[in-house]
Image (tube, rainbow, N blue to C red; front, side, top):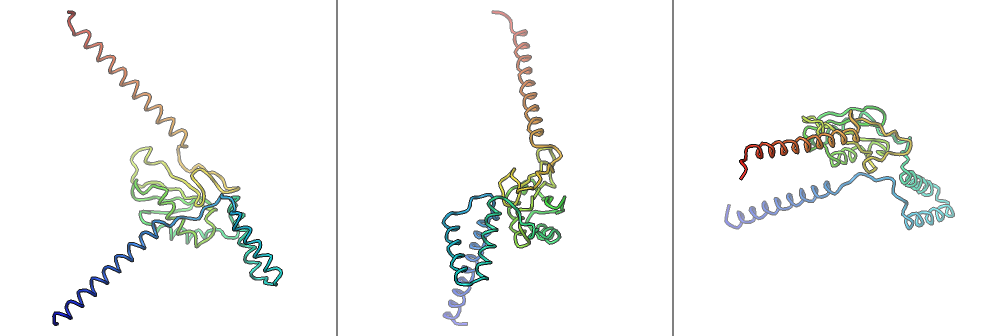
Amino acid sequence: MNHRTHTFAATAVALALSLLLSGCGEQAEREAAAKPQRAGQALDPADTAARLVKMRSQALGGDQQGLQENLQALNADVNRSIRLADPGRKVDRENARIVAKGVQGVRSVAWIDNENLFVIVNRNAERTYATIDAICLQLEPLGDTLGVVVNVQSGAARTGDELEILSRNCQLPPGERAMMQANRQVDALPPQIRAQHRANADAALRAERSEDRQESDRIIQANTPEM
C-alpha cells in the first residue's frame, strides 16, 4: 500500500468513526429528550379551531374518511384533557410485562390488578420517575397508558425509606389518577404515616441530644471548683 492509499484509508476510517459517534450522540440525546404522553391539559384553542374548520370542509366535500379520522382524533384529545382513559385501547398486560422488563435496571414486573403495574428495580438509584417514564414510553404502542399506574420499588432496599414505593400514572403528575381510576395504596406504609414516623424519630433524636448536653453541662459544673 503506497502512502497516498494509506492516507486515504486512514481518513476514511476516521470519518466513519466520527459519523458513528455523532450518530450515537444524537440517538442518546433523542432518547433523553423523549417523554411519555401527558393528559389533563386543556385543549389548544387554535389547534381545535383549525381542526373544526377542516372537519367542516371535509363534511361539505364529502370526505367521510377524513372527517371520521379527525372526529376520532378530536374525541381522543377531549378524553385526554378530562383524564378519561380509552376503554377500547387497554394496554395488553402480557406484552406490557415483557417490554417493561426490557427497560434498563428493571429486575421483575407483575400486574397487581388491571391498572397497577408493579416493578422491582436492581438499585435504589433506579427507583425514580425517570424509570417510570422509560417504562411508560415502552407501553405506549400497546394501548392507552392513561389507564396504567406504574409502581416502582428497589430490590436493594435496606431501610424503610428505601423500601418506599414510587407510584405514578403514566400520563399524569405524581398523586393524580385518571377519571374513575382508584388511587390504590400499594405501599405497606402510607406516605403520611411514614412522614409522621420520620418526624417522631427526628424529634426524639433532638430531645436525646438536648438531654445529653444538659447532663454534660451538669457534670462540668459539678467538677469545676468555684473561683
